[in-house]
Image 1 (cartoon, rainbow over the protein chains, first blue to last red):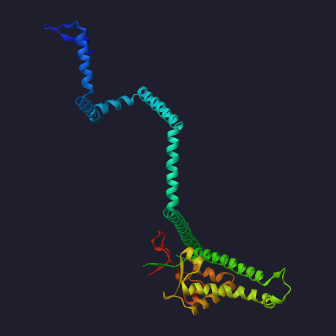
Image 2 (image 1 turned 60 degrees about the vertical axis):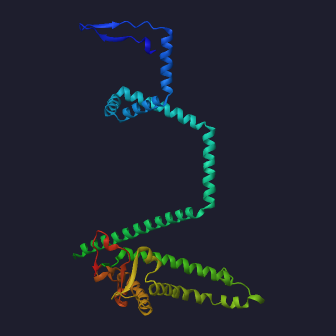
Image 3 (image 1 turned 45 degrees about the vertical axis):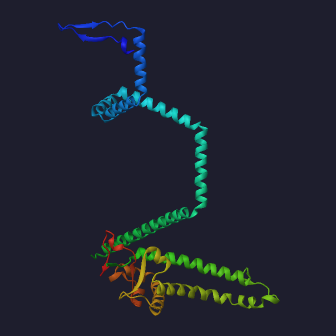
Length: 163
Length: 166
């Protein structure tokens, strides 16, 4: 409650002093709460939060701070553990999700239906791949034979003492 | 374009492939002929009223098969050399047969070369090995028929320099 927060301030003589919280009436506190609740609901508050978040995201200082924090092994380990836990939780939830299963089944059915209706691109793809493989094999056979030609000839010329 | 003349290994591999293909073709043709003519265990099947002709043809088999074994390879090589300039084995290895002046091989040259190959075989392979020591990597049958075998793919782009011609 904003109205009942103790505020620290400096005295005119320089000494630190504690200002005692003002005694708030129940009506005042309720009014402030209602105002804050109202403010949060308004578009103005939404825009304000958005701007603050944007400023934080764009902030080099925050970035540096996060990097420095992550460099600390205990923080990094904690973050890793948290991420692992969350990922595990999400994966387990997905694994047991009937909705997801249904979605995958529907998508697979749709893909299969599409493939049976349009088999030409798939056939073309397989043909291209087979042709590419055959070309690769042919090129490697030719290259190996060519190298062997040169090696044998060089060896024979060496034995015969020819250049 | 730089022409590179084909060496012993490429040419040998192409010949082995062609011989394997020829063996399959001759063997397959022989088997089909025997099935058609009803040869069983080396003997012609007994004739019946409808298959008199078949029986007569069957009696020619002992003469036809050796002849086919000679003529079929001749036909195979001459046809491929004159029409596309390469046999299937040569095509796989990327080789092409040309006249020594670079022209296309005609039927007479092709037949001459086929017969000269027999001569290279009779020299116990020395005719083939001549490819290692002759100008433009030519075998005995190449020299006799006036032909050369070149790489039909971009072999000149490969790093190792072989014997080339302009």
